[in-house]
Image (cartoon, rainbow, N blue to C red):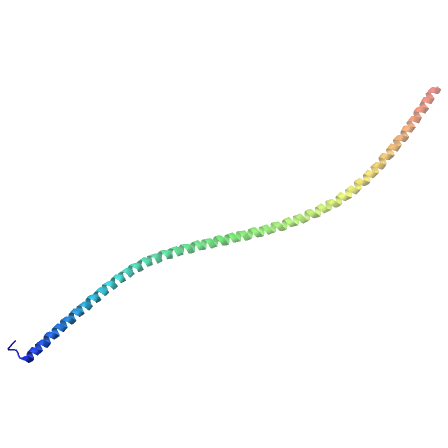
Length: 167
């Protein structure tokens, strides 16, 4: 270094300092690159994990869609069944109401028939009472006639006995 001029030495020193700074910067850049690589790897792992989660969620979503379709079918079947039962119930209700109307009409007719029978019974009872009164009078007349006939028979017997004694 003795032969080297001072200006060259200073340039060399500057160059060496520049190289050291550049090496420091290179180390710093390498450190930054390593950190960036680590971040990228971490993000890559996160992305893969998210892809896996997305795949699982898509499978779950597909399963939920199938279950939803099944539940919709079940709901349609249930709604159809309810509609059919409502129609059957409405028909049974109409039929029951028609039957009630028929029964009410029949009851009304029966009441009218019973009223007619009651009137006829009253008339028959009146006729029976009249016939009993007539029968009572006839029986009374018969008894009177029997009594008269008995008296006449007694009288005839007396006369017969009297005639027989006269002979």
